[in-house]
Image (cartoon, rainbow, N blue to C red; front, side):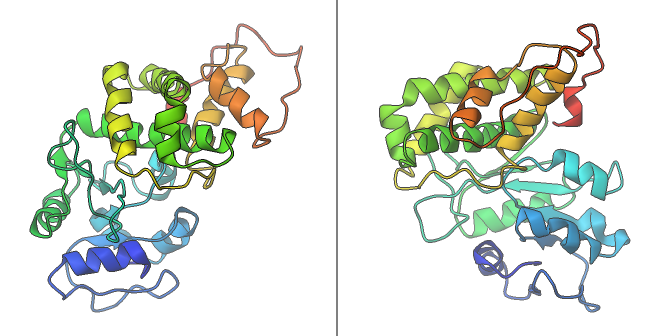
Amino acid sequence: IVGGGCVGRAIFNMGDGLDIVVGRGDPFPVNAFVGPIYMCTKNDDLKAAIAKVPTKRHVDMVFVQEGALGAFLAEEIAPGLPITIVLFWGSESRNPVKSVRTEFDVNGINCVGAEGKWAEEVEWRMNLNRVGGVRLQEPFFTQFYWERNIWLAAYMLVGVLHGGCSVGEVVKKHRWEVDMLMQELATAVIAAHPSVLWDRGIMCERLARFSECIPKRHTVLEDFKWRNGIFHDISLQAAAAGRPDPCPRHTEALLRIGAIPPQPQDDSVNMKDDSVNMKNFL
């Protein structure tokens, strides 16, 4: 387990007590046995942490970070490796990996991509400790992966727009606003991932139920590169290609809180340039 923070400790507690825990700046242990390598660092520390893992062990890495990691991992890891990605959504519990359960997610909202090498081991830990969670095949895992990122981007942003109110206040007082924003971001995702064809209305209901279970969580715009920045990059590339902004509500909200600088109009933009490829960002 790389990273001894709250998530790293929680994953250690979910195991059999034999896991090796190292700090994010520590060298990779020479006595590390064959098995999953849980990468529990902050996103911005992940590049340095990966560099310490022997290349032949990259296939064993399990990523638990929040935010969109796809483009970053494509640059850091050889293509085609069955790496494992886990989505721990958080809860009101003291256990940071305990899963929220609603009528939409009766087994828990946490999930792990079934194509990952260590997906079964992750599921075993979740079931053994009753934290809740499921193993998902594609395209369902990609759908949940983007729902998680859409929730982070939309609920946090709407909360900040309203004075940093809690998640509970967002879902109670600003439901229409956050639903419209989520549907907009979902449409941008679908453009890059045609196989992700979820019902956006059900998505909004599902994420509202989850939000009602964590009403005290504060909203804050953080880790911009990994969260809202992913969607803002889509808007920037569309503008560079002379296309309309696919996320205008999102862009307007970022401008209102000063998260991005005003974008000057460039008359030199080639309106026929169709080189934009949103998959670069997704």
